[in-house]
Length: 293
Image 1 (tube, rainbow, N blue to C red):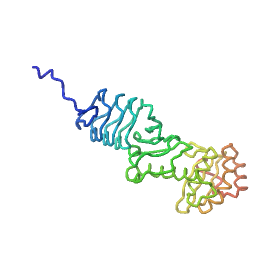
Image 2 (cartoon, one colour):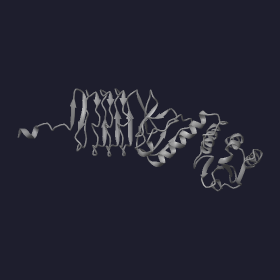
Image 3 (cartoon, helix red, strand yellow):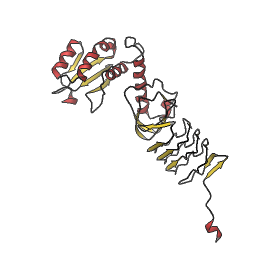
Image 4 (cartoon, rainbow, N blue to C red):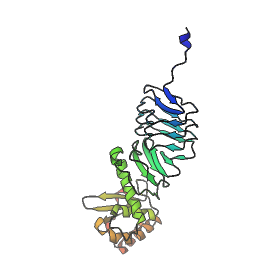
């Protein structure tokens, strides 16, 4: 009978304040207050865990701590956490919520960011938006959880971690590559663009004009790789305007396009934009942009 009242064995192995291991078959765990460190690979492959609350006593979350916890949906980071490894939440592909109580880390747009270094450490699943405060992607593993990524205007990321393309979704990698190219162009003088793509120059000019591009915005851009050009679709009553920008002539239109974009941003009419485009010697591909018709 006494056996019926015996306390069940904890799935956690803890020594000297370090949580070293968790039983891979654990359905749920409660990390006790007093643990100071989540050890390397401590929860690796614990595929049944759905939520984790890191107590305030924990100061460090080590490499691969929660790697491949494929069912993990929610993580709460305690107020005492001072250090989180780049790979701590690698392959947590079901992660829907990240909450930080620590003054050393913030969560913005689904991204976990180190306040001091302004590095993006990891993300939740699905679509995320990278804050303009982020200065770098911490590691090639940092974007492994998300499937789509966008960036706030005024971004500062100018480098891609080595081998990130092997760990991140292809669309995520391409979006980051475009963002880095744009940000590098912003750092250079636009008169010195030998190493900057036409698409990056166009992105910079749009941002400088205060224009966003997309389905619900005043402008959208389509890259035509076959003819090596970018088509700029501009909203204007009654039907919009389409401008063709040849990549080979970027050194020319980068000087004249800003004035046209300024007119777009001010809400100029179709006739005013048409006149401006002609004055700036921009190539008008169509006086009827189907998207806005």
